Amino acid sequence: MRLLDLVENVEYKCLQGNADIEVNELVYDSRKVTKGDVFVCISGAVRDAHDFVPDVIEKGAAAVIVEKDMEAPEGVCILKVDNSRLALSQMSAAFFGYPAKELKTIGITGTKGKTTTTYLVKAMLEKAGIKTGLVGTIETIIGDKATPALNTTPESYVLQKTFREMVDAGLECVVMEVSSQGLMLHRVGGFTFDYGIFTNLEPDHIGPNEHKDMDDYISCKAMLFKQCKHGIFNIDSEYCKQVMEGHTCEVETFGYSKEADLQAENVELFQKPQILGVSYDINVKKDGEVVDKQHIVVDIPGDFSVYNSLCAVAICRHFGVSFDVIREAAVSTTVKGRVELIPVSPKYTLMIDYAHNAMALESLLTTLRAYNPKRLVCLFGCGGNRSKLRRFEMGEISSKLADLTVVTSDNPRDEEPQAIMDDIVTGVKKADGAYVTIENRKEAIKYCMDNAKEGDVIVLAGKGHEDYQEIKGKKYKMDERDLIREILQGI
Image: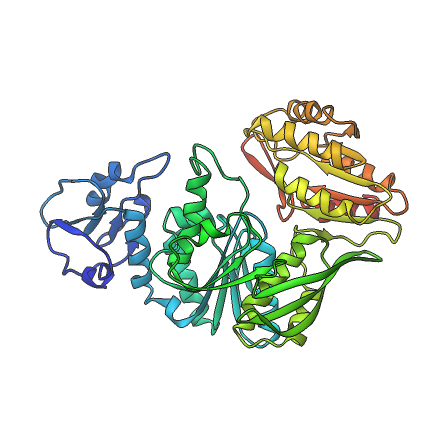
């Protein structure tokens, strides 16, 4: 491609050479540069790619995109930009022929609910005959091909390449999770979403390597609504107005509020063998007046299931999906590791969930407590090389809300599992719940299953979709579904 075509939407200053040249490949990893490539210098948290400019020039790079004044040998084009991550996203879109223009793009942002909502949307659209790709925390799905995810929102080059593959595979639509990091780092730059969705916001991802404070977190989420045509917002969130600030999109709302365009009411929890679910009515409004009323049943428990499914309904109505199709998808869609019920016994309910911090665990256990189980049993561990505060908080919350806490191991990394468990127990002892400690996760799960009582709800928290344990720098295969199967088979 001509470099001029790649940078047609990029604001830059030419420090040296001529941008009217042919280039072979767009590269942002210095190790992958070959002769004739254009290299984009990304300033990362650990390394600054500007340090590798001499190396990539030696390898034959024809052009380099920089944020700093640089010197280079004659014949190398140097373009200076204000933000090289934004430039990479704009150049990636151009490199792959602007594939987002050939897809209906749906971006979902929020602290919780992104993953489940994307799967619900995909299921509803697919049942309506609309071929839909998915990009998210668990995996990227293109037709029958699923690839495990490295990041919730991939780097812009990977994302644009994925979009191109989706178009080439005959897909019409893509639904994706858009993380605050993805927005902050311009991974979704270079195109405009058809639909941007805000699920909710809670204090999370605040820290030296993520967002400096809550205002920064909110402003990053809000970026999506300056980059989409139609915005769909959870009106019940206390941060909704702040996220909406400065929006450039059409606005639609959902929630329990009477002000919502799609309003949920008459919510009822229900239990069936191996199922904890929720049903509710939807008031569909136009100009504040109810124009339609529908009933929805979801075989996933709790209040958050109302929000996730209601959000999915709001999106799918724009694609002309009928409520009959929506109902069918809502009752049959499950998401790996998100309140995933594992049918093992009619006597008790066993589920796997990704809740791996205090906020998520509290939400999950509060939801399950509402179903009045005989006992609520919570098994979890905490990751090594991570905040000790999380261990204390999760231990205390489980002790307050669960009847029995089973403390075990979860990705100890470079720490000793027992030391992590001791920290969790410190938190557990701040409340009055019963607890046991069993380091081996399989043995801990077996303990829960062997000692289950009629009417118990047992939740295995923390691993969710993960299929490994990380110990001393190495990942070992470990899927809780396999462990449960082996326990049942007596292996």
